Length: 226
Image (cartoon, rainbow, N blue to C red; front, side, top):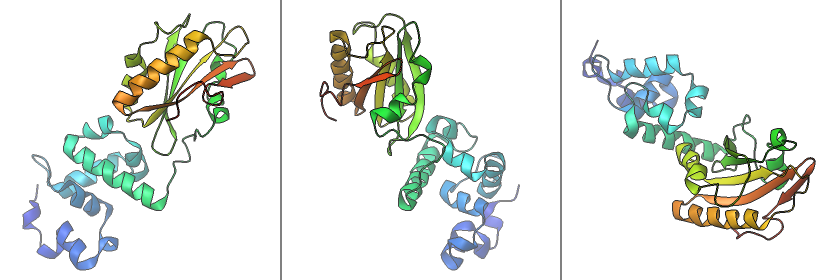
């Protein structure tokens, strides 16, 4: 392994960036500027090349904190730095991941719930959204009879924390084919919204589907605005 300090000064990534601008740096050199230090046995340029060989740039941009921080040589501190750089770039360019559905209405949400519309048992599902309302994760929280006491907030919000969701849409189906919310549905929604306030994760709607019918508690004015 050659040491980075043994390179000519004009070939060191940071000095090269200052003298020649970012467009004259390779992908590995740009990554090295962000990571700053290598690992035992590899300098930062070698480590950066290994990372980019394993994770092409588009794939790297899609990694969450947990996966990014587990890459050898990155760890939690560098993962935070990379994620912040990736997100700032996306926002500056107004980039949306075209592979992720955008949830802006009850219609958008119900389109992600087709598998439970005609289910014979009640399924409680959570749709986890990113900063631009993109669907970043979907999880079935419970299957069976639904009431306010059987769904615990921790079961809803643990996945939200794990996937760094900004907000969540909760949903369930009514096998009766009547999508109108029950008192338990309203009570559960209030409970989840209160828990979300503490965590800083907004519960922005509760969707009930029943066959081809759909009911939004938000649109019916049955939940607090977020």
